[in-house]
Image (cartoon, rainbow, N blue to C red; front, side, top):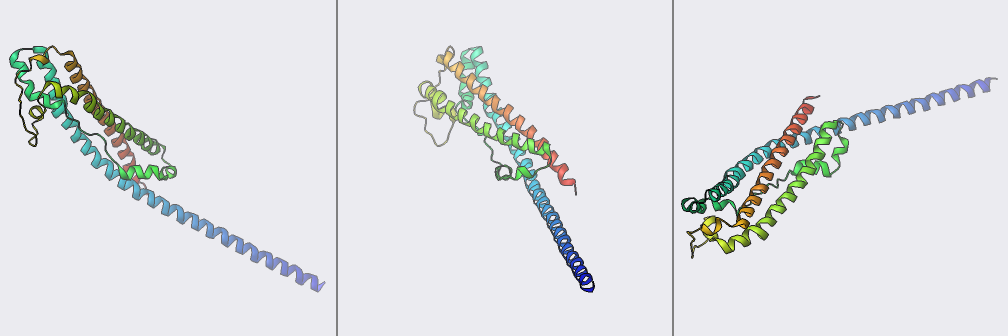
Length: 237
Protein backbone atom coordinates (compact mmCIF):
# COMPACT_ATOMS: atom_id res chain seq x y z
CA UNK A 1 0.00 0.00 0.00
CA UNK A 2 2.82 2.39 0.88
CA UNK A 3 4.55 1.73 -2.42
CA UNK A 4 1.31 2.32 -4.30
CA UNK A 5 0.87 5.72 -2.58
CA UNK A 6 4.42 6.68 -3.49
CA UNK A 7 3.84 5.74 -7.16
CA UNK A 8 0.60 7.73 -7.23
CA UNK A 9 2.30 10.80 -5.76
CA UNK A 10 5.16 10.43 -8.22
CA UNK A 11 2.74 10.21 -11.16
CA UNK A 12 0.80 13.25 -9.95
CA UNK A 13 4.06 15.15 -9.46
CA UNK A 14 5.25 14.19 -12.97
CA UNK A 15 1.91 15.18 -14.50
CA UNK A 16 2.09 18.49 -12.67
CA UNK A 17 5.59 19.11 -14.01
CA UNK A 18 4.48 18.25 -17.53
CA UNK A 19 1.48 20.55 -17.21
CA UNK A 20 3.67 23.40 -16.01
CA UNK A 21 6.02 22.86 -18.95
CA UNK A 22 3.11 22.82 -21.41
CA UNK A 23 1.64 25.97 -19.89
CA UNK A 24 5.06 27.62 -20.05
CA UNK A 25 5.44 26.68 -23.71
CA UNK A 26 1.96 28.01 -24.54
CA UNK A 27 2.67 31.27 -22.75
CA UNK A 28 6.00 31.60 -24.55
CA UNK A 29 4.33 30.96 -27.90
CA UNK A 30 1.64 33.52 -27.12
CA UNK A 31 4.22 36.11 -26.12
CA UNK A 32 6.22 35.35 -29.26
CA UNK A 33 3.09 35.69 -31.41
CA UNK A 34 2.19 38.94 -29.74
CA UNK A 35 5.72 40.24 -30.22
CA UNK A 36 5.70 39.17 -33.89
CA UNK A 37 2.37 40.90 -34.46
CA UNK A 38 3.67 44.04 -32.75
CA UNK A 39 6.80 44.06 -34.95
CA UNK A 40 4.72 43.38 -38.08
CA UNK A 41 2.32 46.17 -37.16
CA UNK A 42 5.22 48.56 -36.64
CA UNK A 43 6.70 47.53 -39.98
CA UNK A 44 3.39 48.13 -41.77
CA UNK A 45 3.06 51.58 -40.22
CA UNK A 46 6.58 52.52 -41.23
CA UNK A 47 5.79 51.45 -44.78
CA UNK A 48 2.50 53.35 -44.64
CA UNK A 49 4.42 56.49 -43.65
CA UNK A 50 6.74 56.20 -46.66
CA UNK A 51 3.81 55.49 -48.99
CA UNK A 52 1.96 58.52 -47.60
CA UNK A 53 4.94 60.77 -48.29
CA UNK A 54 5.39 59.33 -51.78
CA UNK A 55 1.73 59.84 -52.70
CA UNK A 56 1.74 63.42 -51.46
CA UNK A 57 4.89 64.34 -53.38
CA UNK A 58 3.84 62.58 -56.59
CA UNK A 59 0.40 64.23 -56.59
CA UNK A 60 2.11 67.64 -56.66
CA UNK A 61 4.22 66.57 -59.64
CA UNK A 62 1.13 65.28 -61.42
CA UNK A 63 -0.67 68.58 -60.94
CA UNK A 64 2.33 70.37 -62.44
CA UNK A 65 2.26 67.96 -65.39
CA UNK A 66 -1.43 68.72 -65.96
CA UNK A 67 -0.59 72.42 -66.12
CA UNK A 68 2.14 71.77 -68.69
CA UNK A 69 -0.17 69.72 -70.90
CA UNK A 70 -2.93 72.34 -70.63
CA UNK A 71 -0.78 75.37 -71.37
CA UNK A 72 1.77 73.96 -73.82
CA UNK A 73 -0.25 71.43 -75.79
CA UNK A 74 -4.00 71.67 -75.38
CA UNK A 75 -4.07 75.48 -75.56
CA UNK A 76 -1.87 75.60 -78.68
CA UNK A 77 -3.67 72.82 -80.52
CA UNK A 78 -7.07 74.27 -79.69
CA UNK A 79 -5.83 77.64 -80.98
CA UNK A 80 -4.61 75.95 -84.18
CA UNK A 81 -8.09 74.59 -84.89
CA UNK A 82 -9.67 77.97 -84.19
CA UNK A 83 -7.26 79.60 -86.66
CA UNK A 84 -8.19 77.01 -89.27
CA UNK A 85 -11.86 77.76 -88.67
CA UNK A 86 -11.25 81.46 -89.26
CA UNK A 87 -9.22 80.79 -92.38
CA UNK A 88 -7.93 84.32 -93.05
CA UNK A 89 -4.32 84.85 -94.13
CA UNK A 90 -3.55 86.64 -90.87
CA UNK A 91 -5.02 83.77 -88.87
CA UNK A 92 -3.08 81.16 -90.83
CA UNK A 93 0.14 83.12 -90.31
CA UNK A 94 -0.44 82.67 -86.57
CA UNK A 95 -0.03 78.92 -87.02
CA UNK A 96 3.68 79.58 -86.82
CA UNK A 97 3.14 80.29 -83.10
CA UNK A 98 0.74 77.43 -82.31
CA UNK A 99 2.08 74.43 -84.24
CA UNK A 100 4.67 73.81 -81.52
CA UNK A 101 1.95 71.99 -79.57
CA UNK A 102 1.67 69.30 -82.21
CA UNK A 103 5.07 67.49 -82.16
CA UNK A 104 5.43 67.49 -78.37
CA UNK A 105 4.70 64.59 -76.03
CA UNK A 106 4.59 65.24 -72.29
CA UNK A 107 5.11 62.07 -70.26
CA UNK A 108 2.52 60.97 -67.70
CA UNK A 109 4.25 57.76 -66.64
CA UNK A 110 5.07 58.25 -62.95
CA UNK A 111 6.91 55.72 -60.84
CA UNK A 112 5.89 55.11 -57.24
CA UNK A 113 8.65 52.70 -56.15
CA UNK A 114 7.66 52.53 -52.49
CA UNK A 115 3.98 51.86 -53.17
CA UNK A 116 4.66 49.44 -56.02
CA UNK A 117 7.23 47.49 -54.01
CA UNK A 118 4.77 47.22 -51.11
CA UNK A 119 2.16 45.72 -53.45
CA UNK A 120 4.45 43.50 -55.51
CA UNK A 121 6.36 42.08 -52.51
CA UNK A 122 3.18 40.65 -51.02
CA UNK A 123 2.82 43.04 -48.06
CA UNK A 124 -0.68 43.90 -49.22
CA UNK A 125 -1.86 40.50 -47.90
CA UNK A 126 -1.03 41.70 -44.38
CA UNK A 127 -3.39 44.68 -44.60
CA UNK A 128 -6.57 44.40 -42.56
CA UNK A 129 -8.10 47.66 -43.79
CA UNK A 130 -10.13 46.65 -46.85
CA UNK A 131 -10.38 50.23 -48.17
CA UNK A 132 -6.62 50.67 -48.23
CA UNK A 133 -6.09 47.24 -49.77
CA UNK A 134 -8.62 47.92 -52.56
CA UNK A 135 -7.22 51.36 -53.34
CA UNK A 136 -3.66 50.06 -53.49
CA UNK A 137 -4.74 47.44 -56.03
CA UNK A 138 -6.61 50.12 -58.01
CA UNK A 139 -3.48 52.24 -57.93
CA UNK A 140 -1.44 49.39 -59.39
CA UNK A 141 -3.93 48.99 -62.24
CA UNK A 142 -4.04 52.74 -62.87
CA UNK A 143 -0.26 52.95 -63.12
CA UNK A 144 -0.31 50.13 -65.67
CA UNK A 145 -2.82 52.07 -67.76
CA UNK A 146 -0.55 55.13 -67.77
CA UNK A 147 2.10 53.10 -69.58
CA UNK A 148 -0.43 52.06 -72.22
CA UNK A 149 -1.54 55.67 -72.75
CA UNK A 150 2.10 56.78 -72.87
CA UNK A 151 2.96 54.20 -75.52
CA UNK A 152 -0.04 55.19 -77.63
CA UNK A 153 0.90 58.88 -77.44
CA UNK A 154 4.49 58.18 -78.48
CA UNK A 155 3.38 55.91 -81.31
CA UNK A 156 0.98 58.59 -82.53
CA UNK A 157 3.84 61.09 -82.65
CA UNK A 158 6.22 58.83 -84.58
CA UNK A 159 3.79 57.22 -87.00
CA UNK A 160 1.23 59.97 -87.71
CA UNK A 161 2.30 63.44 -86.60
CA UNK A 162 5.99 63.57 -87.51
CA UNK A 163 5.61 62.00 -90.99
CA UNK A 164 2.95 64.61 -91.82
CA UNK A 165 4.96 67.54 -90.48
CA UNK A 166 8.06 66.48 -92.40
CA UNK A 167 6.16 67.08 -95.65
CA UNK A 168 4.14 70.17 -94.74
CA UNK A 169 6.13 72.46 -92.42
CA UNK A 170 9.63 73.37 -91.30
CA UNK A 171 10.21 71.25 -88.20
CA UNK A 172 13.00 73.42 -86.79
CA UNK A 173 10.84 76.50 -87.26
CA UNK A 174 7.75 75.30 -85.42
CA UNK A 175 9.56 73.56 -82.57
CA UNK A 176 11.89 76.52 -82.01
CA UNK A 177 14.55 74.16 -80.81
CA UNK A 178 17.79 76.20 -80.49
CA UNK A 179 19.78 73.11 -81.42
CA UNK A 180 18.15 72.92 -84.86
CA UNK A 181 18.86 75.09 -87.92
CA UNK A 182 16.20 76.61 -90.18
CA UNK A 183 17.26 76.42 -93.82
CA UNK A 184 13.92 76.81 -95.61
CA UNK A 185 11.49 78.65 -93.28
CA UNK A 186 7.80 78.47 -94.16
CA UNK A 187 5.64 81.59 -94.10
CA UNK A 188 2.63 80.47 -96.10
CA UNK A 189 0.36 78.00 -94.32
CA UNK A 190 -2.59 78.42 -96.66
CA UNK A 191 -2.23 74.81 -97.86
CA UNK A 192 -3.18 73.65 -94.37
CA UNK A 193 -6.43 75.61 -94.34
CA UNK A 194 -8.40 72.98 -96.25
CA UNK A 195 -6.28 69.97 -95.39
CA UNK A 196 -8.62 67.44 -93.75
CA UNK A 197 -5.73 65.19 -92.77
CA UNK A 198 -4.09 68.04 -90.87
CA UNK A 199 -7.35 68.89 -89.11
CA UNK A 200 -7.79 65.25 -88.07
CA UNK A 201 -4.21 64.98 -86.83
CA UNK A 202 -4.58 68.07 -84.63
CA UNK A 203 -7.86 66.76 -83.23
CA UNK A 204 -6.35 63.35 -82.53
CA UNK A 205 -3.49 65.02 -80.67
CA UNK A 206 -5.95 67.16 -78.76
CA UNK A 207 -7.97 64.09 -77.85
CA UNK A 208 -5.02 62.12 -76.45
CA UNK A 209 -3.74 65.09 -74.43
CA UNK A 210 -7.18 65.66 -72.92
CA UNK A 211 -7.29 61.94 -72.09
CA UNK A 212 -3.97 62.39 -70.29
CA UNK A 213 -5.33 65.28 -68.24
CA UNK A 214 -8.47 63.32 -67.32
CA UNK A 215 -6.39 60.28 -66.43
CA UNK A 216 -4.05 62.27 -64.20
CA UNK A 217 -6.99 63.98 -62.51
CA UNK A 218 -8.61 60.63 -61.74
CA UNK A 219 -5.32 59.21 -60.51
CA UNK A 220 -4.75 62.21 -58.23
CA UNK A 221 -8.22 61.69 -56.72
CA UNK A 222 -7.44 58.03 -56.05
CA UNK A 223 -4.08 58.86 -54.53
CA UNK A 224 -5.56 61.62 -52.34
CA UNK A 225 -8.24 59.25 -51.06
CA UNK A 226 -5.63 56.56 -50.34
CA UNK A 227 -3.40 59.12 -48.68
CA UNK A 228 -6.27 60.16 -46.40
CA UNK A 229 -7.06 56.55 -45.45
CA UNK A 230 -3.40 55.86 -44.66
CA UNK A 231 -3.20 59.02 -42.55
CA UNK A 232 -6.19 57.84 -40.49
CA UNK A 233 -4.59 54.43 -40.06
CA UNK A 234 -1.35 56.04 -38.85
CA UNK A 235 -3.25 57.87 -36.11
CA UNK A 236 -4.32 54.58 -34.53
CA UNK A 237 -2.11 53.23 -31.74
